[in-house]
Picture 1 (cartoon, rainbow, N blue to C red):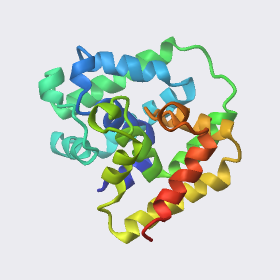
Picture 2 (cartoon, rainbow, N blue to C red; picture 1 turned 60 degrees about the horizontal axis):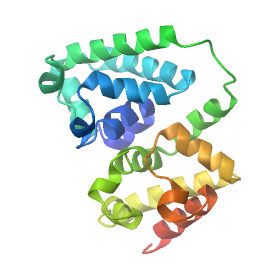
Picture 3 (tube, rainbow, N blue to C red; picture 1 turned 90 degrees about the vertical axis):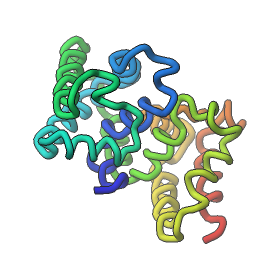
Picture 4 (cartoon, rainbow, N blue to C red; picture 1 turned 120 degrees about the vertical axis):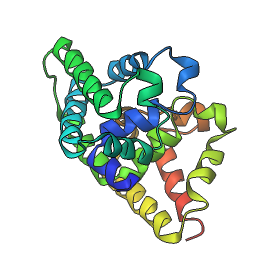
Amino acid sequence: MDIDELTKDFPRFSTLMGGYFNYDWRDDHESAEAVYDEALKRMPRSRVEQLGTELRVIASAFTTDERVQTVLDTLDTSLDPALDTGLSPVAWLEQLRAYVDRDLAELPGPQDPAVDVSNDELALRTPRIVNLLAAYFNYDWNLDHPDVEAVYADAFDDLPPESRRAYLDQARSLQAALDDDDAVKEYLRYVGTGLSPMLDLGMTPGQWLDALVARLERGL
């Protein structure tokens, strides 16, 4: 089990645990439930449905406290089920499933799924970019890094060549699939990232993606 595998198989769960439950989450939220509320509020119905499906699969595949904890450790989340919820990992997972199911029951019916279906497919094809945007560029990223380049250095510079190549291939895949600024903006919104190309770099979304590819090409 590795983070690429988990992010590919469970992109919504990975975003929740790696992006929202970052190392500073307790500074901004009073409880795990407050984080759930923030995350679910940002998701369209289709993503909440996907999260619910992923949680059911995880619960059936990882049936012991040790295995659920291994999943959390692999995603490098700062949530500690016992410390933050008073529950064992398995019991916490069941509580999260129930929380998501209740939220879904209160949402209005399905809307036009065209954009989300497309981005579902892209997220599955680009798990490393999803992890970069959701985990490295979480909503508090600028508390730990002075600028975007510092995040890139943290994420890329110590990787072996084959891992950098994997990032590059996935970024190029996005370039081929997202043909204008609006499409890149929708992908960023779908992933759930704290990065704003215009605010943080003075670039349009498309320019940011081109610059990311160029950054990854350096040194290869």
